[in-house]
Image (cartoon, rainbow, N blue to C red; front, side, top):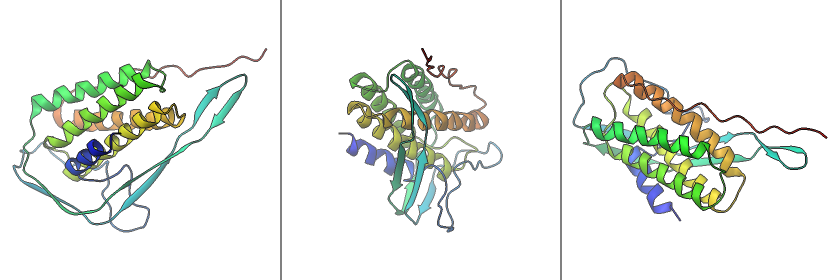
Length: 212
């Protein structure tokens, strides 16, 4: 349903994934931030040479007549690209608008049941915002491979969660929990580079059950 868009997001964002490679070979560290604010460089080259697969397991509580704890596993694999060259210079006004959209996406999704058409559409819109950020240049002061890796991975997760929500899969909720957390990490890095104050809303309270 969204695979063409996801592929575009990955190509624009450097085709990396959340977390590091478990094989012991050199890998991009997504939390790395280059020191200093620096000046935008018109041309940058990023090279990725291996397939990196990372598995994230999240725990969610499914409330029925009793409390059942489910631990669905979500896995995403980035295809290798021998080289990726970008000549895009960071456009601050456009990027600020898209970061604001990400905060709005999270606020809306926090208030939704992650099941059905409405949630699927909102998650798809979030993946579009991430793709637009991937088409922009990296913020001055941030390590470009790390930045594009986070955007690409979040885009993959948002698109997959959209498909899962459309199919009423409970995995959508667990995947969204990962997306929400990593979006917060991304915005923290952006705030450090751009001296901005983007912040996600307070997480909604977890559902509770009472025993009769």
